[in-house]
Image (cartoon, rainbow, N blue to C red; front, side, top):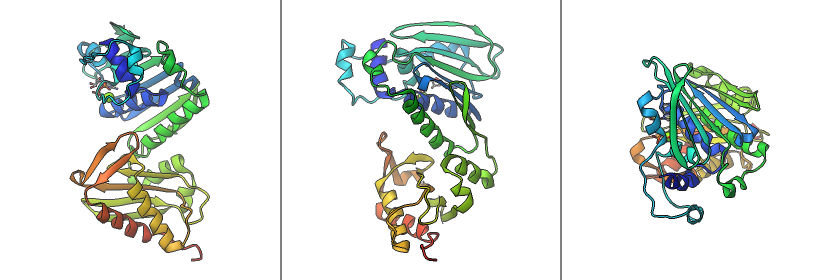
Length: 324
Ligand code: ADP
Ligand code: MG
């Protein structure tokens, strides 16, 4: 089973940022409203995620780290050449197979907190009592300590951390209601406070994407249930070119969406250079396939033409020509 986990790890765990992604998504799934992410040495040394979510009951701890996958493959070396295997729902098992993982948790109703520890390929999970508030802490130490081939692909501390920072920005722009703190080498790098009032959303947008959004951002709100767009675009010519697009609250970089936005700017201003924007498209989930390319962040709209024209018109309404 550990071998299968290491196979899966190749899929799920490419670099520290992919570990952070899986763990933060778990925290969000657990209903956390506060998430603290502590990183040391770009994540090679330590990735620690603390949340105030629903927690994991003592008797579920070991189960959370295990998975029931079989593999006919005999050695890890075979595996490193196979990269198209699809694995979902095995994040913790995969991560613990290539690191030293400590999971501490307490559901609110449970009296005491418990901790499970797993490291590398021998899946001997130890469970013992620990002091911990309601919620979950997962510590991932020494990532890839037992897979030198993968460790070799890690970039510098700074680069790996910048991938994590970017990931957290994307998440911060999709969950305004969750407060997120990110530290690196014990220094607070980002602190996104929860914004429960929609009017405060722009504060976080400016924090993530730059203060130009608060100063000059043009707010858009268009469409109705089933196909809606809202967000902010910067004026033509703005030096800030930070661009984020979301479909049903998932960050995407989709060709059709970007094409429609580009065309809107071009038609109004004649400019080819796009300024920054943060745009959310909400569409009836039956009208879209989101998992076309999970890694490429592309979607497939069933009625692409219609969506394209909708985005085009919505953006055109707010774009101000250069000489206006
Ligand atoms: P998946 O998220 O696809 O179920 P994971 O391996 O990521 O698979 O997590 C395994 C299980 O561990 C989850 O289904 C969940 O029950 C539990 N779990 C993981 N992280 C947390 C967390 N932060 N809070 C509560 N439960 C968690
Ligand atoms: Mg998960």
